[in-house]
Image (cartoon, rainbow, N blue to C red; front, side):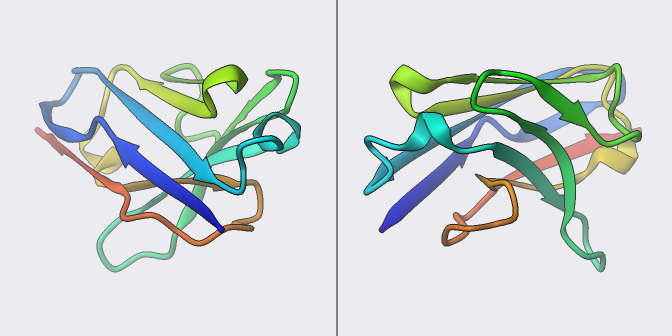
Length: 117
């Protein structure tokens, strides 16, 4: 079983920055590095959406809404992934989740990001 723990969220003013972390543990220990990993978010009343994903080799892809503002990265040796979020906007307010691309594993609790205007 894989456990995912997201952290780093908080309340920030528009234009501010946050860095989210995702730690994977459990049966992922020896295989994290081979998975495409992704960040998702779910705003109140909306469906969960893909924000960014990163290949096993570190190639990133971004949703148009965050391109140029967010940076996804990973440290395979630590089974950890990050999301650096700059120039935050109120519409970025959501609970942010990490998972393998496609949502393969059980979802974690997520981390709340609130951007005030």
